[in-house]
Image (cartoon, rainbow, N blue to C red; front, side, top):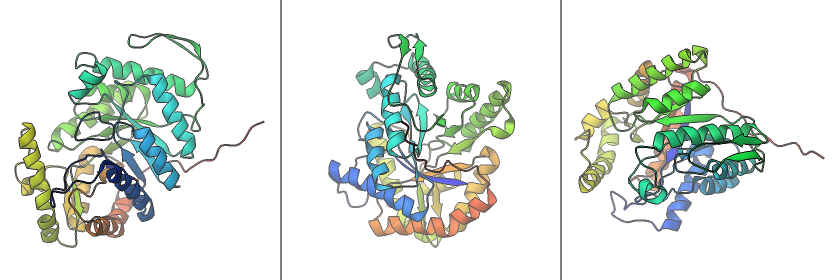
Length: 355
């Protein structure tokens, strides 16, 4: 199994202390955590894209470029790139550039995005977001693979023998399709032979398992070898400690603050108590053995090879955060790597100069 740390770069008061870092310090924390993730042996680090408060993750390629300069081996993920909102040509230019700056360590997770602000900022609505996502991806895919593209669609001006620069370092790049509940996204992934990344953060396991089964069915429908399907999955929260009692005690104020935030926003919580969330959600809070058992249980349903954990401190001190990540890598990751075989990520590459 492979392990990623992922952040949406929320900018909120600390749920324990009530203090909020400055915007500048919050970005520095994100980059420093990516450096730590590489140091500890995580396989990837992801930055999401959101365009409304409380998130400040509107420019993943900028953040990932800075992380690329501070790291050398860890894979860099977008989580997700909202192609329904972006001009595919501009998105291509940004990410092809980042592909070179990172020595080919880039992996894209694409999706339609969510949140009411996108309709206001980009005039993308529930009625057209899926069509925009599909059209944007299909153009992006061609731009990455073809030196000259002639194309016409609905949501941007047509192209005639268009050239886009720079040409990417990875050819092709692997693109994952992020999905929470929609069959449209997994069908698009299956059609093109791409992997999926299940959000797996809001609900119990059943709807996500059903979506992954649908993906595998559509994968075969489109003529692909079932053995080639690749699945990743998220988690709803993370903290590992030596004992379950210690983990629950330390994580409880974080969970309580999350519930309070849901109430302020008028969002009904799915899990009303921490014990219920630990039992029925994808949250990984507990002792090393409890986390191993839970991931293996989810794997029985998902067959996933990649999993993401919460990258942010989320109410933990720097020391607590680091100790949790270190314990995960020392006692959890080795067992899961052994029990769940996974295909390798690409190693960093270096472009060969041409005359």
